[in-house]
Length: 374
Image 1 (cartoon, rainbow, N blue to C red):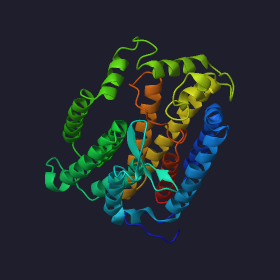
Image 2 (image 1 turned 90 degrees about the vertical axis):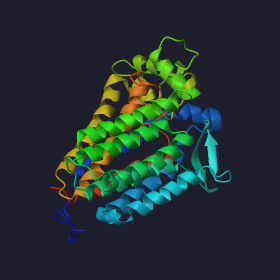
Image 3 (image 1 turned 60 degrees about the vertical axis):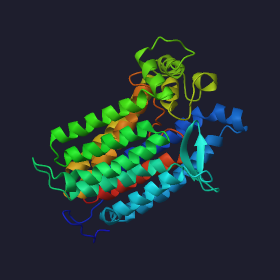
């Protein structure tokens, strides 16, 4: 690897070990938290307290380790040539979830692709393929005060429109918001004038508003957020139970494995509510430590990006940092009442093999880029 020479970058050197350490701690912490959060649910539903943990290890950690190794040893510059083709393949997978014999509908949403021997969420792959595509697009563009719409923004609008349409049909509104916000962060850091970023955001807000108002479950979540005292049996039940769990953890928590909320009261204990379980068991100190880990990861990615001469690698890291930051904020914000409930899982910690494998692979790509920074 030391002999590889990348355009616009120095020859390869040792990777960023601080980045590796933070990623390893987050992954191990995620396993420990999931083991506790899922024990009662696994015993009740499947007669096995380790059911969810074993699935996460086999369907998430194992493919994630493979993804990390591939991402580490394959020079990231090679992704630039295949970015568009990988994204097109991802779009085909998103379309495939609507094929009756392939798509798997759970919880009112059609997000899973069932291939018989395993199932996965194609939308999760966008967090790599879409960001890499946008990074490739922006790295090859020189922005000025006068934007060439045909060459600079039309490809972005077309691709983003197609992806957003397919995701909203599933529906996966929060995923659309996270991906578009992350892509705009890459565009802004790439030098596009503020007015164009604001224009895209304004258009997005109008479209989201038009989608929310006619839709029952989206509208109820917004109205429940605006009216927090509407009753524990209403749309606010999930959020209220999460707040009780977080508050009851106090400073030091009830102790690992001793959460009460995960047994009967708190919905989605292994999914988007896992931070509430963590806060109840480990308290403010434990929850604060997890928040600190995410902050360190995001800041480290941005610092490596700042020191990366190659634009493509720099924008990949900015995009990955934005995805992790947006998804973490949306999850923690919704479960603590700062934002409306969204159902977005917490990176590295929530149950979901596809999501864990994707975030681990993102980490591997980031480590690869770090070898050419400075």
